[in-house]
Image (cartoon, rainbow, N blue to C red; front, side, top):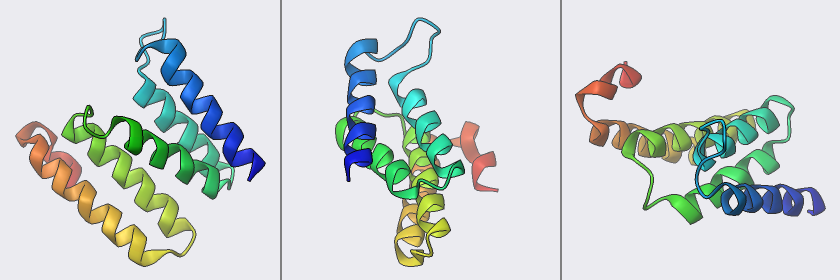
Length: 111
């Protein structure tokens, strides 16, 4: 629980301090994705999930369809790694729907 709060505070600080982008040009969305992928790679599935859920809660309306698709795909992967297959399927379906909204330039992601 304490670790999840720490990750949540870290993500919030990234959003507030960067104003959406860092000096290296990395957006808050990219930072959150990188953080969640790193946590997932290290087996911290709950923390990785919390990073993405917080991202979606704060930024879903501002994200482009392709970014939403990537986020939901990563979330589905986390659920799948935990054996939470119904949740994974829901998130994969949402990712596909967002990729379809993104248009022809992102169709390769659906292949």
